[in-house]
Image (cartoon, rainbow, N blue to C red; front, side):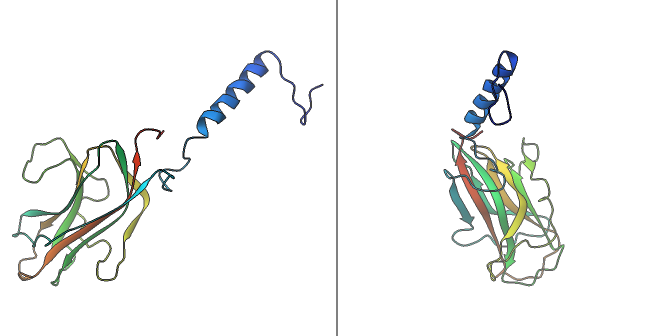
Length: 181
């Protein structure tokens, strides 16, 4: 006798039920919200400008404040960023910040792209002096061996002085590609 407490299936119902159980069992190893929470097998990434940061370039020129290559065999989830000019007075629009993927500096015709929402940003994001990270509502995902760069284009910051430097940080986590669905 079939009831809600004791379902007894036969024929096509039995096949569909077994298929649903198999799908649930396969999904037990899936991490349900990789785009929101780091899975247990993830590693934190706190990539920050190292050594002497680059100085603000000449007007009309770009400089790379930070470059991070995703390790082979890993996928990188960028959850937050810091992009600042440090040491001088920079007004909004003096520097345009861009995060791009696989686009080297100085090569105009190269297969790469800017990261949507992070192209020609006219203001600093986050703050090094106050330790504030600009967090994203949803992480940006990058594939193994992608080159992610934080670049600054000097539009009109001509009188900031020689002591002004570009600093950036990429905050997130990386996950092994094996076992990630």
